[in-house]
Image: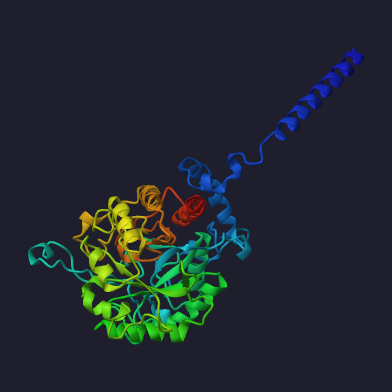
Length: 455
């Protein structure tokens, strides 16, 4: 009987060893690029996101932090979940994807907080009234009251921040690099000037340039329609920008077909100035032309109506951009018009820069403007815009925007947030960095397709 038991034990032991050997052999057959080896794909899958949420919450409870891809930046009114970042989630500079200098993103430095600016700026944006008194009477008036009530339908992960906070600028630059963006188009007013709801921001340009350079990003200027903007003041302001910032290594210059590298300027609402006035500045025969001078640059006009394309050409601009993230809102922002606009630009030797955006909603400041809302559709709207842009094979793609929170076009990280005043929109079921990841995806796709265009 004892011999039988011993024999049985030996057989069971051999069987167990046999099973273990098979399992080890099967494990070695897993391909290196199996599904779990592709973090981008998994990060966008709602099912996988739901499966991992519970585990992430348990980990964050022990570490006292929320999982993130970048180091946390302190905000004026930090949320409890934003206090720290796990050390394991910090991405080193060399781990960030390379910048794509053909991807430009519109950037706004007009936000302020009591800690850095003595008051809230722009987060407390007023509710704009409709021009028709009958319509206006049906909507609320007043202004927002941060930090719980801000002038946006989304809530930033950094909280209502100050654009003067160096740690905020650093966080923004790191987010841009994570998205493979190479150039930020900085909203700019001349010194001592600002938009009607803001404060002067030209003093921030040096630190923005310095931190951009740290992340190998470039800075170009998006010139806003400041008071009395005309051909003469534009000459003075372009000269000011180039003289003061042109030698900085982060100052963007674009290489043209002749081999020259020139500064580049986007000119917002260019159509409000007559073509004859622009021609004084932008054509060789203009009365005070900037052409063939040390300040010669590339100038891009905003197209809204179809007729603007002829005026832009007559004015002497070097190209066209569309800015608005609302497909169908204007002639220029309508995706189906981009092929004909690109063809027109090719014939007239202009550059066409389509502007893509993740969606649009400005009802936090224009409560009567529901009809122009464009739902993000969990990222599909953004990807559709990129698809339309790539079809016309543009030299540059612009993105509206990194952080125009009032109009809901931001790709900056946003989080779920509910207060006594409102429930904010968010990016769920995806992560706060979904639009940065999508931008990175399309940057890579653009680079691969561009190589084929050139061959």
